[in-house]
Length: 255
Image (cartoon, rainbow, N blue to C red; front, side, top):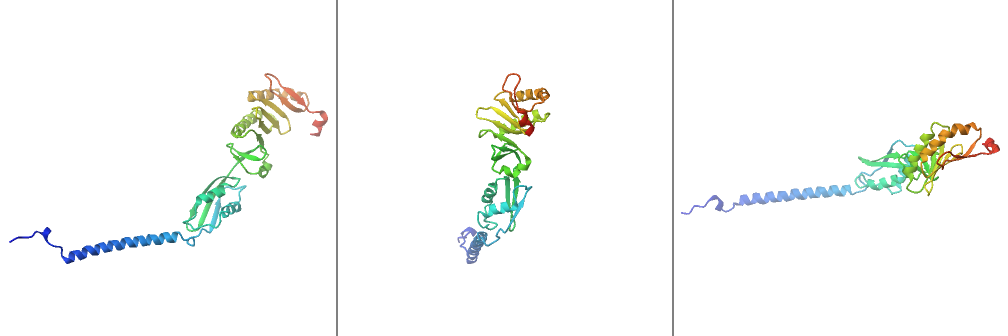
């Protein structure tokens, strides 16, 4: 008599039913997960769900107002939902404001857009129409906005902003022990430097040894003052000494 092993026994109906039941359950779970994910994605894509309705502007602001920021954001159109709103687009709109140096934007659940603004800090007027910050970066704010600060006026070819700013600092320090204050400093296309002081004295430094030449002027101030005359210009483009132009007595008395 032949004896069949357990492996050779035919599957029983109960075992087949259990196998198919588990498979159906697994498919049902997968479909349920897929359906749930689809519902969530559909909900997230609905602009009516969690609309951004508040804009909070932060930062130490002197020239940029919260209204400026909100108006810049709203030029892009109506804000979308919390999930769909692209903050990079808003970043570009706010960053385009003339006084904005840096901006950070984040969304805060469930309906708030937070905009953190850092302003430029102007140190000089550049070529009469723009401003320079302390790093020599040109920005397009109107110099009239800060006219009460009486910033130095710097002039130079395009690309020389950092150099002219640094030279102004050096020359300012050289003149610090005197009564002369720099109102304007210019670098022309021939690489020649000129100072105009706040009381209208023009100082020609030329292209070479500008710092040494200005120090020479500082050393001559006592002798110049001893003349009792008012300087109109000083030309230091010499190896030694200086050429001094004087204001006419009637012109000096008027000023």
